[in-house]
Image (cartoon, rainbow, N blue to C red; front, side):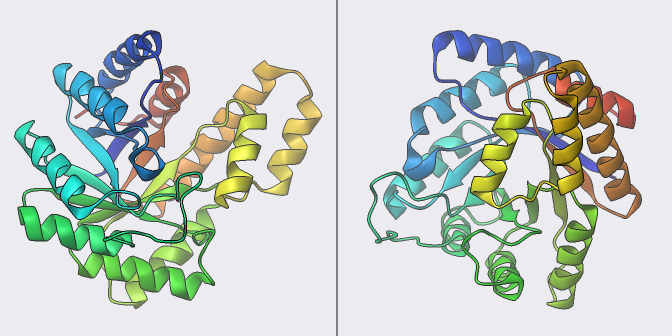
Length: 278
């Protein structure tokens, strides 16, 4: 059975929150296994993340809150986990997180995602299904892919159940990463993260910052379309549909869609791929 899920980020305004509730209703009709909700650097969106989690729960959908350990104390993280458990949540996305702006070199009581996974298990046993991050093209701060694989395996050994990858546009990098992880004795499912191509200028800026490579042929083709946004959207949909199908045909256990809080891009991919609800 394949697993399909969708990610949101917390809205910054009441108007944005209402729009996101409508997006959740529409995408919820597709039947994803769960929605995940991101968590800002150093807990900077803690209240808004919690608000979004409650909104999605109120619509009747399963939610996996993101939780990062940098910038939060072990006690603060424990209190948030207790609250999530009281709300009936059974899945957590456990991340190291990015350093918030202005934060010094000290990483706190739980400096790495593996430490966070261990802390969750120590406090709540097997209550939560724990997702962790995977980086098929290596984390931007990793020395090399071998080091990255080592850190990934450490998270699994501390109790992670499955992983969601950073988005990518080259299926070979995903399969190579999974092969390396399996060779290291780690067998947890690794779900590819899928980023629709919509606002290409924003995608380029974000990709350059997070280390996701946009192949040169994609950049060249988008540049050739100039200001023709309709053609760019159609081209992007074709490219990502082929990528998703290649991943599923190659044995990927599912897909996790980065919705960017929009309905249409994820909905179009879902329908083109013929993904089943529920």
